[in-house]
Image (cartoon, rainbow, N blue to C red; front, side, top):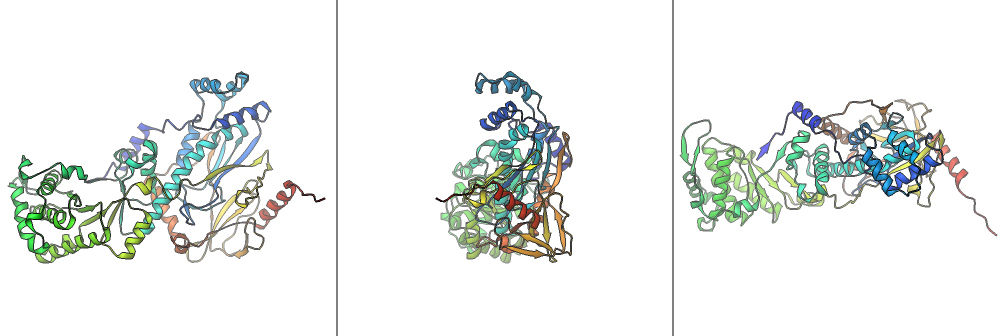
Length: 555
């Protein structure tokens, strides 16, 4: 069965009525953020102006790209950032008794008027080391935001990226449906998954609440329980159905039985092997949804029973003027069974001259499908044109987390650097702005980070791009187009950009993915995308590194 959800205007109304997620609040944080804030406050650093970068170090799923999601929720968090009286009372109960009362009055007064936030627009393909968010403001206040913002971006970007990878694997011509609510990490995880899977390229969800909240298409059929709940035709209390667009009532059961007899030779099945309870279930479901009849046909035996029973009911519906939709497979050899089903549809189409059965029937596959499953099906050849994907999509089993981090890069205009023996954990200090440089074919060539005072790259002019840490990796790039990646989203307590609708974010994500070369997006041995720094920023990083790195001594 299908539903179109709600239209754009209704969606806006629903979202405004529901408002923000009440769980997203300042107390959704780690205790050490609050203890650090107190230590900052006590050491008179409450007015220090800090800059933090939120970024990730490595692309997920052994891939070379990530789709950025979760920005809107971060901005809503800023809009409502304040501690309530009950919050203050609880914080008092978990901090030591000697904590000064003036600190709690300070917490009561904090707001986001002094916060400035730059971000890469949500729905953009992003890469390691490039800041997704650049947040500037009073050191204790920005510190208090770290955990919440990481929580809002890590999973959203991870599941959106997973959805985009499924879309790339399946191809643009297949319908992708998110069926993951029952396996998601709680109700909030289920709603987030539905939203960000749609943004990442899925066509619909089984999650009814997500459909209502976000205006997404909702899809679903029936379960095996529906089929096994029927035993025989005697359970059908009302055997009738009206012809489409007519008041004439006919005996629908007889129509179905008539078509069962007609299809014996065409589909080559034995009438005594067809499960009558399954036929009964299909008839009852078709009576309820004559124009949305899509049946699960693997409860007993796809070839001997499920397919003949579906086709008998579908042909009866077609004769009465209705439009059956297709079938779903949830077990077995999906490639083989889908081809058998399609071959049966082709035979019916040719014998009875019904193009619908050859060109218009949906074959949905569900059965614990992952990205590798789709690639395997593509290699085998199949007739599936729609995938229902749940567990491996919403739980991101191949990648437990994206691994975003929130690192201090400047205090009172003085750059800060974190050093590590692990090269990927060394931070790029100071305020930065990033640009994406495109080639003449429209594909992205490199992301370039610069210091704010540097002139932006100019199309047609040669720009030196350097690896942040490897001195031998450098190249001149002459871009055809230059795109500034960071946009001002929050300043002086006010949102600076309008929120995009979910549909607009979905379209933006699809467009951004198209700008990335296929060899970077491929599953097997993808080409790493180049993230670079300007010559001036390279020198600055390494001078600061030498300044802060201890000098060894031999004796």
